[in-house]
Amino acid sequence: MLRARCVIPHRILLRPYATSPGPHALVFLEHREGALDSGSLSAITAARRLGGEVTGIVIGGPDQVPDVVEKAKKLKGLTKLLHSTSPAYSSQVPEIVSPLFERLLSDGTPFTHVVSAHSSSAKSLLPRVAAKLDVPAISDITSLEHDGSSNATTFTRPIYAGNAIATVRAPSSIGVKIFTVRSTAFSAAPSEDGSQVQVEALDPVELADAPTQHIRTDLTKSDRPDLAVAGRIVSGGRALKNAETFKATLEPLADVLGAAIGASRAAVDAGYADNSLQVGQTGKVVAPELYIALGISGAIQHLAGMKDSKLIVAINKDPDAPIFQVADAGLVADLYEAVPELVEKLKQQ
Image 1 (cartoon, rainbow, N blue to C red):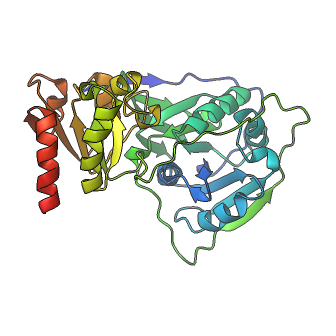
Image 2 (tube, rainbow, N blue to C red):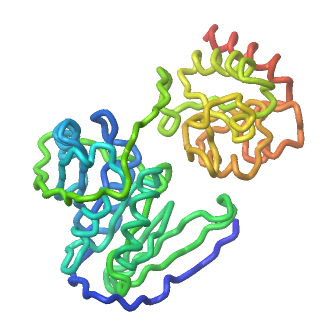
Image 3 (cartoon, one colour):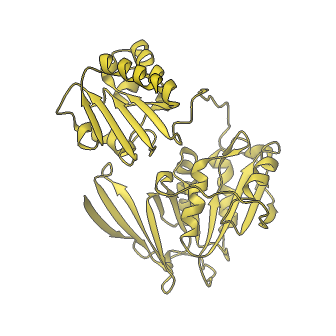
């Protein structure tokens, strides 16, 4: 694997930052329907590796924040928990939420780092905040190391669809360092009873004339495990022919394994599956215990989203398919014959 190294250049900031004896990370804790997102738990783990204090922040509407705060204050690794409540924060539109972060990170801020999962929400919010503060944002990091003597932080992040690893060093002169975390690279922070995390409420930043209005949120409902955090995933590719064949082939195997269903971009573009099921560079990045690829050739963009899986099983009739280069177990066979037989064998166990 190639390795690239780059250094973020020194920036002349127009305002001074308060010096701190050590790193102090602010972790953006995302939530949905009263539950904390698993990616945010991984972000806490990443923040702890800086070696300093870790403060979490929960933002949402009046009917959302209380329940989430009760769960968040039990998370191991947090030293403090901030929360801000406003009806305007219910949908967490980046243009409406970002002024709160700008106020928190203004002159004299105690925070040296801002951390979040590499989620759709954070990818919209944090670059906006970084631009307002005139500091760089580092995305999708897979490891980090903080040098206490120089207060510089070194990150690694995949580039070129994971075929190269860039090493990025952010010196202390940058001020606040903003980065997002690839959740599959860090374990989730556990909860612990009896936690004594200090909880503090923040006044929201109300905008007289919000530039963006939230209309509605459309979510795909499923009784299956969440693809992003599932321990087992069955994915299908272009070879599944159509949506009916995709469903009829993958669902019996996913049912017997208790697995989530995924798809390659080719299958999604062809209309076989919803885009919420896409695995790959432009879809979800997953790292389950078991990943079964059915009729997936193994394009580099797809491999970037699943090659960290613990056990990869591929079934494809093309012996030269690139998927076999990363698979731990491969079967060159017609999937329409192999999958039903596999389902029957599993039912007998």
